[in-house]
Length: 282
Image 1: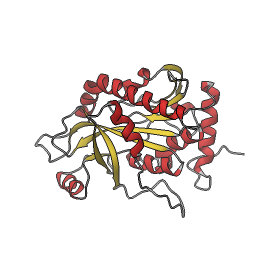
Image 2: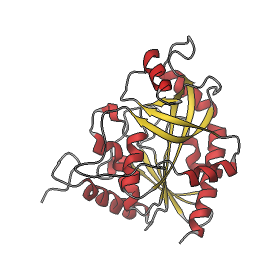
Image 3: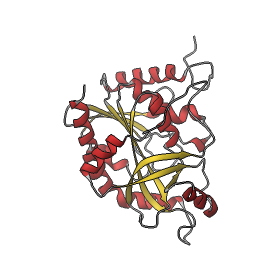
Image 4: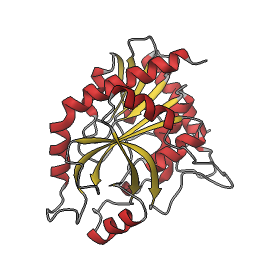
């Protein structure tokens, strides 16, 4: 019998997530990962600040995963023992919707994390800022999102409530760590081209304050899987039309590299606070 595949639409995507979670257990020796993090542009250095690395697994060795085609993503799944004894799964192999591999692959990491035992999903990204007060290098909590991809990870008559999708409780824990953290509404465009100034103006008009090409679809899948979601954006550049400067991926990577040490410290402290909360909850 052929192994279940995400490309076979007759196969439930959870079946492939179960295979992936089993492979992670075998490769890491960790029976349960209590929380998971997807590290986007600028956030990667945080992985080794969280705790002791137990194992690092090439994403391509785990069913349903592949190496990201985007520079700045390491292409690994890392198991980390946190100081309080819980375990975190760090996903450095994000699949973006614009890569053309289908929405199932975009959210496969989130579904795998849920099957692996995670109760919290931390989603991070590098994004464009609409608010001119947010200079490149500013971290912003995601309060809500607007999905402009014209897609959903949910299949069939699956009706999921997205109220408080980005947990107010978890945002509160993050603001205990850093009370200066601002909040914003993330707008996911399809990409891979950057948004036009008119599109950014539209996003502002409908309530957006951050624009990017990831996260929203993953967050929807996380809610379907029963995970509590914390979202964080690194403002890597002003969105198109906010200033008269042209946009480039090199600028995004440069802003991420410059901010990485500060972000690593911030995210490590937030994860420690969230993990202590998890340990105290039944």
